[in-house]
Every structure is written in structure tokens, then in C-alpha cells.
Length: 396
Image 1 (cartoon, one colour):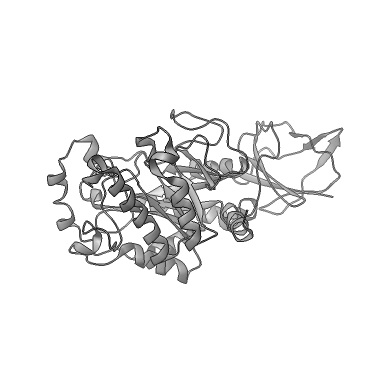
Image 2 (cartoon, rainbow, N blue to C red):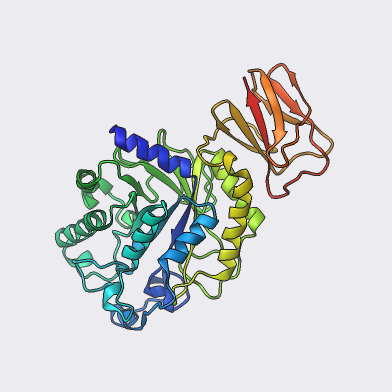
């Protein structure tokens, strides 16, 4: 593997926490990004939405500032979703944001803001297209169209990577149908260190980097379409919504609580995966206050406990009923949210000499003892951080 690509992969893994953004003209309807498909809206009717799209309150700078406050290190944003509408100024279609009353290139603005504030940027792009006529009538022409658009995104904006979603619409012989190897080679001629992901792939091609887990944690498949066993050497990433919707859904108020989201982030890190947490901005370009509140709460937790998340590796121990563990060099971080009261915390498989055990916050030492390959740590009856208390173990 190219050295530059290896460095980019390590940088991506070290980020651990990113913002997913599903935003398009579907936000005007406020019923999610699949509204065109679910409600069987004809193309001619759906095509009326761009003429109404004018998100005058959109500020890429404010979005990126929120990302920084949330402790996130990268953004993955929809350049084109399944409805075929482009959120950037593409030379290959007129069905794009610069032909709306808004007129501005939203993707170009977020790319500029990310570069200014050292936030990495990836683009979500859907090869599946409910709008483009060639998708059903001329596969050769459509393949050329969507390949050109993906390469255009790299040429115009130089993102960290691409996140494809929709190849599952034609699952037979994915590489031959979608010509993925051809596309990936062309991407890496433009950007050799590009990070590439393709949603729902059970066995990614060698040129892909990310294995995604949609609405689920690595090693689990509650939603029915994720692989149970992560692919070796892949970068693992869980993408998840704050409520139950990706695109803006005005009626969806089932927002996960800040403690639940903090634990999801910690679980992802302990399973060696990133968390890509989604927001669906409103048609005026603002992010729901409920989502802002939760992102800022996670950021507050990370301002204290970030050392146990960023640049760490997971999958340290096989049995952690009390929570999970990340590691960084000779330091273990025990993430605890299910400790048994009045019982020492048991960590099986610690063979080397322990030098120090303490809470990350407050940095108070904890009594411990070693019995064979088991580390026993005495915890107080009340833990300092109910959402996820972190204990730091330094090993010789």
C-alpha cells in the first residue's frame, strides 16, 4: 500500500468522531431523504423543489465551528443523494444547487471552511439515481456520468475521501456493473491517498478502505444488513442518526440522549471503529437545536476524556461486561458504564506490570491488585461520570 495512503488511513482512524450531514432539497418536505421514493413522488413533481430551495441561513463557517465544539475531526456530507440533486456546482448537470434561488455552491463553501479550520472532509455520493433518465435506459451513459461526477468532486475540492451509497441497488457482480475498480484507480490518479468507502459491502474490494456499519455497532446486526464479522485491515466506521432519520424529519422527535450518544462513541472506539454521527439540516440551512445541544454535550465530555478516544485502538480485551477498553501505547483506558457496586472491577488478561491506576477526571489514584493475569481495581460506590467514567491504567 502506498505510504501516503497508509498515513491517511491512520489519520482517519485517529479522528474517531465525525459529523455525517444529509442535506438536500428533500429537507423542504421535512419527511426524510427517502421521501421521493417512499411517497412515490413523480420526477416532474419533485423537480419543482429546487425552485423553492433558498437556505439563506446556511453558514459553512458556523457548521464547522459546531463540529469543533463537538470534538469531531471530520465531516462527511451529501454531494448527491438518491434523488439525483447535486449540492455542488457540477458541470455535468443543471440539476444542482447553483440553479436554485440560493445560487451558491454549498459544498464549495464547506470545503473552504473545513480547510481553514483543519477539519477533514469526505463526500457522500449516491451512484443510485432516481432522477437521471439514463439510469434506467442507457447504463453506459449513466456510468460515464456518475464516474465523471465523482472525479469532478476530487478535482474541484480535494476531499479526504468518498463515501458511496447505492451500489446495493444492483448487487450482482458489483465491480463489473458499477466499474468500481476502474473508478477507484482514476480517483487515486488524482489523489493517491484518498480514503474510499462503499456502504453495505460485505467484502470490500482491495482498493476500498472503510467498512461501514449503518445504524449499528461493529459485530452486531440488529438492522439486518450489516456484516457481523469486520473485514480484516479495514477502517471500521459506524454511521448513526441522533433521532431515527438521516434527512430532516420535522416529526421525528426520538432524539437519543447525550449520555447514550457518549456511550455509543465509546463503544465504537473500544471496538476499533469511528462514529459518524448524523444531522439533517433544515431547509433554511440551520441544524436542529436538539442536535446542536447533543453535539455540544459530547464535545464537553471529550474536552475532558478525549485522550481515551482520539488516536486510540480498540479490541483490547474479549470480555468487558463493565464497559470497554481503548489503548494508546502502554496506556489502557477503561470505559466504565456497567460496573457492579461493591465489587472490584475485574480485567482479565493483564500480564505486564501495572505502574499506576487513576481516574482521568478527577486524577485521583485508585487501589488495585494483580492476581495472576487478572487486574482488580477498587472503585468507589459512586462513579464521577455517570455517562462513561474513564480509568487510566499505565503499564510498564
